[in-house]
Length: 393
Image 1 (cartoon, rainbow, N blue to C red):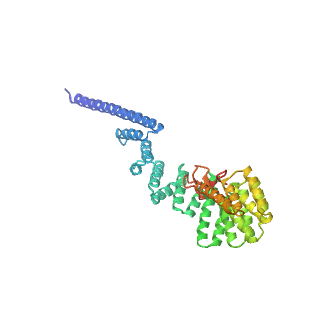
Image 2: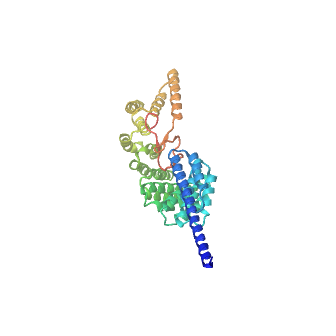
Image 3: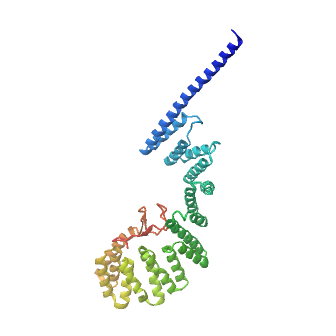
């Protein structure tokens, strides 16, 4: 057989072998891709049914059948999130760190992995590491920049780094003005509180003015400014500042009453706030306002008229605190067994009042006896308010 024929057969054999190999590899890739697709959608189905453990097992299997060339970015991202949702933060960190180490990642993919890894660090309480990653992502011009800023804001809130929180919240201001202005006002109030603890009254005033610039309806800023004016014996200014709450949020009027009563006492003119108290009673009736008015009536017109006023108000708006105030007023007028019986009733009503929460979050329903400006449960700002009704104001 001529040599050129042998050479032609050799070339043909190589070509056929190469073609068959490619066909076989293509079939294998198609099978792997099919398995991956099937497992991926099965995992999504488990997620929709809130079956986290089954979803994790399915996604792990989908990764086991793939090589690096066909392994999907989304599957690993989802797997890391699932570990985090299950509380296995260490595994979530491992998955996302492994993904971040891959040299084939595109820039946008790398930013997204950094964001997920920052979430893991936040869950693990590793705030410094989370902050470093989030700062990098927030400096980018990607679509997840503002998501990173929101998480960074959470970091600074936990660390009580209020100047840094203000810096970040101002960047978020254009996209969510109402919410950000509320937060900015509270951050400024936090700085004012620090200044007050150091007796730096000038700085405290400046921070509170800044709070009102961010949010003119900041009740917290008005209450704090009113307290400063009172401490400095600027009683008229204190009264004016506290009465500003009427325009800011009617729900907090009851919080101004104790200090307003002290202002009237220092000025020696309790009647000076009667007009304001009557306006409050009409627009936002509360036990605190009613009892303050009753005390003024008692001073000017005696116990009997004050008692009648309280009874009239309790008929319109029953409240345990109002009943307790009425009982206490009557106790001063009684002697002997009648007084003892009424004291027993007073103690019982007082115990019921002390057992009840005073404030409630309008967002999540958290309740307690202390006014938190940031809800301990849902972490929202300015949503904890005095409870109204028969067991509240």
